[in-house]
Amino acid sequence: MSNRFHLSDPLNIEGWEIVETFERFTLYEEFAERIDDALDLIRNGQEHWASHLKDGEWSVESVRVLANVRRLSSNISQQFERSRDDLPRCIRWVAGESANSAINDSQYIAALAIDRACRAIETLERWLSGFDTDVRSGNFESLAALNAEASNDVAEFMMEVRHELAHLEIEAREAVADLIGTARNYMTLANVYASPVLSSADKIRISATARKAGYSSANIRREAVIDRNQSICSHAKRLLSDGRSDREVVGIIVGTDSALKTPSGVAKLSTKQIRNILVEGGVLSAAVRK
Image (tube, rainbow, N blue to C red; front, side, top):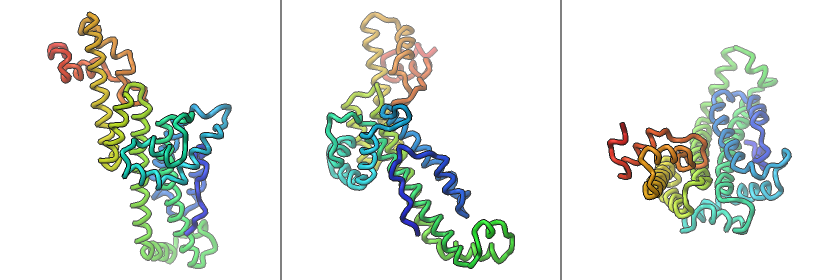
């Protein structure tokens, strides 16, 4: 199978170009959803790096750092697993980046998410191109002609090749699922570090939880929600101590970043959700729910 397909410049990846590359493969339709998932993650990662995009060009530093993170991603993961440092610090240490760099913590983590998504696409390309290479060994003039032909001989030959390569297909599918899952978990953690609400201590604690939980995005989100709710309760207590009424407290919080549903997101909690959080946190009485 081909080893030449490598996404060395992930910030400049255009989804349609990747799709065009894959559409020529015989089994593309079966893997199209996975390809789209990986491309969505790359786009989300690029959004984290948007501050380094000017006049349609990515900064030299951003391109350099992404390339280094891609090259050293396995070393970074190993360092994080055995270190007590949070993930951004591990990335900077392995990549030799200064703490005074213009790259922020969420961008470093998003770079790792982009790397895993790129690896998923590269893995799929190796499997799909390898399959087509083996199909061509059946002496068909072209795969386009093969796909257009409806003979039983062609269908049977393709099934035979796929059966012979079943172990490679299983390995590719499992590897891609694992890579995309890890990319999602990294992206969730990148969103946590991009949060304007969470403190540095909270982010470091959530990073430690991610290490212990094996990067489970569900656990990362759960920790972030706990911190969000604690932040809302602390905000409410300060407002109450300033003499604000219960109703005023809820209205004020809804209009601030404390009410963001997710770290670095834009959607906010409703007034009812804010009230419920404050009641459950013991800040307001249950009567306020009405």
